[in-house]
Amino acid sequence: MHAAAPDRLLALPEWLASPTGQPAGLRWHVLPCPQGVEPTWWQSAEVVTLAERWPTCWIGQREDLAPAADTIPPCQPNEVAESHTQPPDGHGPRWTAGTWYLRPPARPNTAHTASRQRALRLLELVHADADLHELEAAFREDAALSYQLLRLVNSAAFGARREITSYGQAILMMGRQPLKRWLHLLVFAAGDDDARSAMLQMDVALRARGMEALAQDAGLDRVGQDLAFMAGMLSRLDVLFGQPLPELLRPLAIGDDLRDALLAPDQTAHPVGALLRTWQAVEARALDNVTRHWPAWGMEGPRFQACILAACHWTLDLIGAGAGRERCAG
Image (cartoon, rainbow, N blue to C red; front, side, top):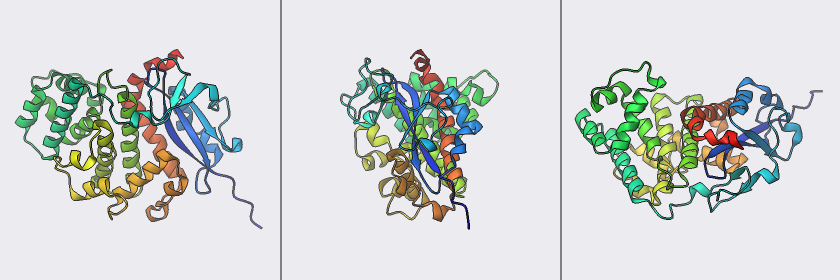
């Protein structure tokens, strides 16, 4: 007689906003899942480290699957407001959950829209393998983009600080593929006039890196992993600009596999379409759809959960630490 298998769980992430609409916390949705991880997962170093670097709570119906309260506390109802239409007004509880930042822009700011359009134009050039002089000229047209480029090249991610004598040199130092990734994310950046911007950046960064991590674990090659990352980024362009996605993708020189995965993820044979649908299910906490493609990928719960956790850490490394300075004030 075999002992009963231990109850298992899947923990799905949701970013929480501060009263001013800035990224401020992480809520784990704890769902019973026979193919998931054992409750001892909460004691792993990666989970504990994430909870130490970013305010974290959990929500779920099964306390026996939840972490110890001294590691990650349960979300208190009076601490979290839910909104799917309006951004926080500055006077609510500690956190705001919901999809309010995925609403179309109400009143596009002309300056920020123009800056995003220039970043989108740069993306077109990079996807079309434009030569260095074309890229350098495009950066010269936007002081904000130029500043961000120079700041990034001089960051710790690119080694020691060094003298940069031209935008072309900065582009060469960065490399085409890192430049393409950075521009994808930069398209979503804006100033204070767009209340959605900070949370939308966190959302799209987590989606892109999560899809890439799943692609790697599922055995896709480097090209497939890059396609998964780009699909995660580009899939939110319609939300950002408030325009149909096919219209926004038309000027981008992307391959048919990526275009089909973005516009018809259920109909394409390319695995990136399934990866996009899987991550959308993660965001919707739709467990059946989350696990739907696991058998085809040879995926197991612990590896899937590890991909999610790695994507959370990556997102915080990239933008969370700077975006969430005010999180410690509450």
